[in-house]
Image (cartoon, helix red, strand yellow):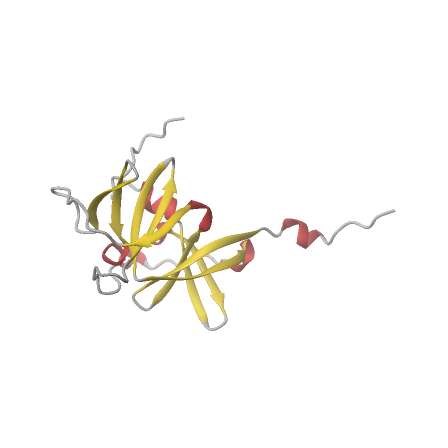
Length: 163
């Protein structure tokens, strides 16, 4: 007769996250949405786009919007040089790039490691956060990247789901 596994281990789900840096803060997003990591390249500007939408690039035949999260979140000093990093994401069968200050690590979090983000009121919009996770002395801000890039304010995706 075999013994049953510990019930807490059965319910614990570990997910991988890509950690990246914006300003002085460390953020993370679900690694399953990451297509590739590449350097910044010149973009084609889009007229009347918000300042955090830098423009578009042609990525192997796909027209890809590039969003600078440093500007969107109001952190860090946006600069574009050979060290600027773009994380290419595949979300809802669309590709887009997000500009960050750097990519730091792949982290594993269990669901219970991610604590709900506190409400900051109007000063900060926490609807794009999955929560916060402590790693040693570091607090990692876990971003709900799909909610962010699917939001109406970014306008990168149709707001009507096509199912």
